[in-house]
Image 1 (cartoon, rainbow, N blue to C red):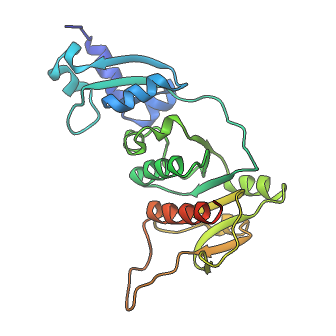
Image 2: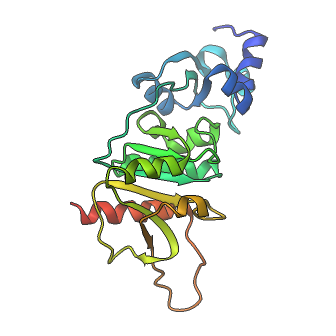
Image 3: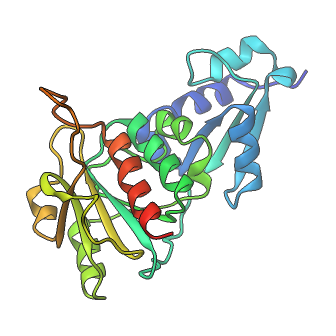
Length: 237
Protein backbone atom coordinates (compact mmCIF):
# COMPACT_ATOMS: atom_id res chain seq x y z
CA UNK A 1 0.00 0.00 0.00
CA UNK A 2 1.46 3.37 -1.04
CA UNK A 3 1.67 6.09 1.57
CA UNK A 4 0.52 9.66 1.18
CA UNK A 5 1.37 12.45 3.60
CA UNK A 6 -1.04 14.79 5.33
CA UNK A 7 0.52 17.72 3.48
CA UNK A 8 -0.09 15.97 0.14
CA UNK A 9 -3.72 15.44 1.05
CA UNK A 10 -4.07 19.10 2.01
CA UNK A 11 -2.39 20.19 -1.22
CA UNK A 12 -4.61 18.04 -3.43
CA UNK A 13 -7.72 19.27 -1.65
CA UNK A 14 -6.58 22.87 -2.14
CA UNK A 15 -6.77 22.40 -5.92
CA UNK A 16 -10.52 22.38 -5.55
CA UNK A 17 -10.23 26.16 -5.19
CA UNK A 18 -9.55 28.43 -8.16
CA UNK A 19 -6.94 30.59 -6.42
CA UNK A 20 -4.73 27.58 -5.74
CA UNK A 21 -5.18 26.24 -9.27
CA UNK A 22 -4.11 29.66 -10.54
CA UNK A 23 -1.13 29.87 -8.19
CA UNK A 24 0.16 26.39 -8.95
CA UNK A 25 -0.89 25.98 -12.59
CA UNK A 26 -2.30 22.56 -11.70
CA UNK A 27 -5.72 20.92 -11.78
CA UNK A 28 -7.37 17.67 -10.76
CA UNK A 29 -8.65 14.91 -13.04
CA UNK A 30 -10.71 12.04 -11.62
CA UNK A 31 -11.93 8.74 -13.05
CA UNK A 32 -10.16 5.92 -14.88
CA UNK A 33 -11.16 7.15 -18.34
CA UNK A 34 -10.23 10.80 -17.74
CA UNK A 35 -6.93 9.91 -16.09
CA UNK A 36 -6.07 7.59 -19.00
CA UNK A 37 -6.90 10.38 -21.48
CA UNK A 38 -4.76 12.84 -19.54
CA UNK A 39 -1.81 10.45 -19.64
CA UNK A 40 -2.24 9.89 -23.39
CA UNK A 41 -2.56 13.60 -24.15
CA UNK A 42 0.05 16.32 -24.50
CA UNK A 43 -0.66 17.49 -20.94
CA UNK A 44 1.94 16.83 -18.24
CA UNK A 45 0.64 14.53 -15.50
CA UNK A 46 2.53 15.16 -12.27
CA UNK A 47 1.20 12.21 -10.30
CA UNK A 48 -1.52 9.59 -10.37
CA UNK A 49 -3.19 8.26 -7.23
CA UNK A 50 -5.06 4.95 -7.42
CA UNK A 51 -7.51 3.67 -4.85
CA UNK A 52 -6.05 0.16 -4.90
CA UNK A 53 -2.66 1.66 -3.99
CA UNK A 54 -3.57 4.28 -1.37
CA UNK A 55 -6.78 2.79 0.01
CA UNK A 56 -10.39 3.90 -0.12
CA UNK A 57 -10.22 5.97 3.07
CA UNK A 58 -7.38 8.11 1.70
CA UNK A 59 -9.07 8.46 -1.69
CA UNK A 60 -12.19 9.73 0.10
CA UNK A 61 -10.04 12.43 1.70
CA UNK A 62 -8.52 13.69 -1.58
CA UNK A 63 -11.45 13.36 -3.98
CA UNK A 64 -13.27 16.48 -5.14
CA UNK A 65 -16.28 14.37 -6.16
CA UNK A 66 -19.23 13.32 -4.03
CA UNK A 67 -17.82 9.79 -3.99
CA UNK A 68 -14.27 8.65 -4.77
CA UNK A 69 -13.32 7.21 -8.13
CA UNK A 70 -10.64 4.54 -8.69
CA UNK A 71 -8.07 7.06 -9.97
CA UNK A 72 -7.12 10.72 -9.49
CA UNK A 73 -4.36 12.67 -11.26
CA UNK A 74 -2.67 16.03 -10.65
CA UNK A 75 -2.15 17.59 -14.08
CA UNK A 76 -0.37 20.73 -15.32
CA UNK A 77 -2.54 23.33 -17.04
CA UNK A 78 -1.87 24.12 -20.67
CA UNK A 79 0.48 27.09 -20.92
CA UNK A 80 0.75 27.70 -24.66
CA UNK A 81 -1.67 29.82 -26.67
CA UNK A 82 -2.73 27.76 -29.69
CA UNK A 83 -2.76 29.34 -33.14
CA UNK A 84 -6.13 30.02 -34.71
CA UNK A 85 -7.09 28.37 -37.99
CA UNK A 86 -9.21 31.07 -39.66
CA UNK A 87 -10.14 28.69 -42.46
CA UNK A 88 -12.04 26.50 -40.01
CA UNK A 89 -15.20 27.10 -38.00
CA UNK A 90 -14.66 28.19 -34.38
CA UNK A 91 -17.03 29.05 -31.55
CA UNK A 92 -16.95 31.79 -28.93
CA UNK A 93 -18.66 31.65 -25.53
CA UNK A 94 -19.79 34.93 -24.03
CA UNK A 95 -20.17 34.76 -20.26
CA UNK A 96 -21.02 31.06 -19.82
CA UNK A 97 -21.07 30.70 -16.04
CA UNK A 98 -22.39 27.20 -15.43
CA UNK A 99 -19.52 24.66 -15.22
CA UNK A 100 -21.67 21.83 -16.52
CA UNK A 101 -22.66 23.85 -19.56
CA UNK A 102 -19.06 24.76 -20.41
CA UNK A 103 -17.90 21.17 -20.05
CA UNK A 104 -20.77 19.89 -22.16
CA UNK A 105 -20.13 22.52 -24.86
CA UNK A 106 -16.49 21.43 -25.10
CA UNK A 107 -17.66 17.85 -25.50
CA UNK A 108 -20.10 18.98 -28.22
CA UNK A 109 -17.39 20.98 -29.99
CA UNK A 110 -15.16 17.90 -29.95
CA UNK A 111 -17.98 15.78 -31.42
CA UNK A 112 -18.59 18.20 -34.29
CA UNK A 113 -14.90 18.69 -35.10
CA UNK A 114 -14.57 22.25 -33.77
CA UNK A 115 -10.93 22.62 -32.74
CA UNK A 116 -10.94 26.05 -31.10
CA UNK A 117 -13.28 27.47 -28.47
CA UNK A 118 -12.84 31.11 -27.45
CA UNK A 119 -14.10 32.13 -24.01
CA UNK A 120 -14.77 35.60 -22.65
CA UNK A 121 -12.98 36.50 -19.39
CA UNK A 122 -16.38 36.22 -17.68
CA UNK A 123 -16.80 32.59 -18.67
CA UNK A 124 -16.31 30.00 -15.93
CA UNK A 125 -12.73 28.74 -15.51
CA UNK A 126 -11.75 25.82 -17.72
CA UNK A 127 -10.06 23.87 -14.91
CA UNK A 128 -12.99 24.02 -12.51
CA UNK A 129 -13.44 20.36 -11.41
CA UNK A 130 -17.07 20.33 -12.58
CA UNK A 131 -16.02 21.60 -16.01
CA UNK A 132 -13.27 18.99 -16.26
CA UNK A 133 -15.65 16.14 -15.41
CA UNK A 134 -18.36 17.38 -17.79
CA UNK A 135 -15.96 17.46 -20.76
CA UNK A 136 -15.62 13.65 -20.61
CA UNK A 137 -12.05 14.02 -21.88
CA UNK A 138 -12.65 16.72 -24.51
CA UNK A 139 -10.60 19.13 -22.38
CA UNK A 140 -7.50 17.30 -23.60
CA UNK A 141 -8.41 17.71 -27.27
CA UNK A 142 -10.00 21.15 -27.54
CA UNK A 143 -8.00 24.38 -27.89
CA UNK A 144 -9.59 26.73 -25.35
CA UNK A 145 -8.55 30.39 -25.43
CA UNK A 146 -9.71 33.03 -22.92
CA UNK A 147 -9.67 36.42 -24.59
CA UNK A 148 -11.69 39.61 -25.04
CA UNK A 149 -14.32 38.52 -27.58
CA UNK A 150 -14.40 41.89 -29.32
CA UNK A 151 -10.75 41.31 -30.21
CA UNK A 152 -11.55 37.79 -31.37
CA UNK A 153 -14.39 39.05 -33.58
CA UNK A 154 -12.11 41.70 -35.04
CA UNK A 155 -9.51 39.03 -35.84
CA UNK A 156 -12.05 37.06 -37.86
CA UNK A 157 -13.60 40.14 -39.49
CA UNK A 158 -10.20 41.43 -40.61
CA UNK A 159 -9.82 38.21 -42.58
CA UNK A 160 -13.20 38.60 -44.23
CA UNK A 161 -14.86 35.93 -42.12
CA UNK A 162 -18.49 35.97 -41.05
CA UNK A 163 -19.41 36.16 -37.38
CA UNK A 164 -22.68 34.51 -36.44
CA UNK A 165 -24.43 35.22 -33.16
CA UNK A 166 -27.42 33.38 -31.71
CA UNK A 167 -30.29 35.71 -30.81
CA UNK A 168 -34.01 35.17 -30.19
CA UNK A 169 -34.77 37.73 -32.91
CA UNK A 170 -32.25 36.44 -35.45
CA UNK A 171 -32.83 34.92 -38.90
CA UNK A 172 -33.97 31.30 -39.05
CA UNK A 173 -30.81 29.16 -39.01
CA UNK A 174 -32.50 26.61 -41.26
CA UNK A 175 -32.83 29.11 -44.11
CA UNK A 176 -29.66 31.14 -43.46
CA UNK A 177 -26.66 30.73 -45.77
CA UNK A 178 -23.87 29.17 -43.70
CA UNK A 179 -20.13 28.70 -44.20
CA UNK A 180 -17.46 26.21 -43.21
CA UNK A 181 -15.26 28.95 -41.71
CA UNK A 182 -15.87 31.87 -39.39
CA UNK A 183 -16.99 32.31 -35.80
CA UNK A 184 -20.19 31.29 -34.03
CA UNK A 185 -20.90 33.22 -30.82
CA UNK A 186 -23.08 31.69 -28.09
CA UNK A 187 -24.38 33.85 -25.25
CA UNK A 188 -24.71 33.27 -21.53
CA UNK A 189 -27.52 31.27 -19.95
CA UNK A 190 -29.14 34.33 -18.36
CA UNK A 191 -28.20 37.31 -20.52
CA UNK A 192 -27.43 36.00 -23.99
CA UNK A 193 -24.74 37.73 -26.04
CA UNK A 194 -23.60 41.02 -24.51
CA UNK A 195 -24.28 44.27 -26.35
CA UNK A 196 -20.55 44.85 -26.73
CA UNK A 197 -19.95 41.52 -28.45
CA UNK A 198 -23.28 41.67 -30.28
CA UNK A 199 -22.17 44.84 -32.04
CA UNK A 200 -19.44 42.79 -33.73
CA UNK A 201 -21.78 40.10 -35.04
CA UNK A 202 -22.35 40.21 -38.81
CA UNK A 203 -25.14 37.61 -38.97
CA UNK A 204 -27.80 37.14 -36.30
CA UNK A 205 -29.36 33.68 -36.31
CA UNK A 206 -31.95 31.87 -34.21
CA UNK A 207 -33.20 28.34 -33.69
CA UNK A 208 -36.96 28.65 -34.30
CA UNK A 209 -39.47 27.11 -31.92
CA UNK A 210 -41.90 24.60 -33.37
CA UNK A 211 -44.24 24.68 -30.38
CA UNK A 212 -47.87 25.06 -31.43
CA UNK A 213 -48.79 27.11 -28.36
CA UNK A 214 -46.97 28.72 -25.46
CA UNK A 215 -43.57 27.04 -25.47
CA UNK A 216 -40.30 27.42 -23.60
CA UNK A 217 -38.76 30.89 -23.66
CA UNK A 218 -35.30 29.67 -24.61
CA UNK A 219 -32.99 26.68 -24.94
CA UNK A 220 -30.20 25.65 -22.63
CA UNK A 221 -26.97 27.06 -24.10
CA UNK A 222 -25.33 23.65 -24.45
CA UNK A 223 -28.39 22.28 -26.27
CA UNK A 224 -28.48 25.38 -28.49
CA UNK A 225 -24.78 24.92 -29.30
CA UNK A 226 -25.37 21.30 -30.32
CA UNK A 227 -28.28 22.21 -32.60
CA UNK A 228 -26.39 25.13 -34.14
CA UNK A 229 -23.23 23.16 -34.87
CA UNK A 230 -25.24 20.22 -36.16
CA UNK A 231 -26.95 22.48 -38.71
CA UNK A 232 -23.63 23.99 -39.84
CA UNK A 233 -22.09 20.56 -40.31
CA UNK A 234 -25.21 18.99 -41.89
CA UNK A 235 -25.39 21.67 -44.56
CA UNK A 236 -21.69 21.66 -45.30
CA UNK A 237 -21.25 17.92 -45.82
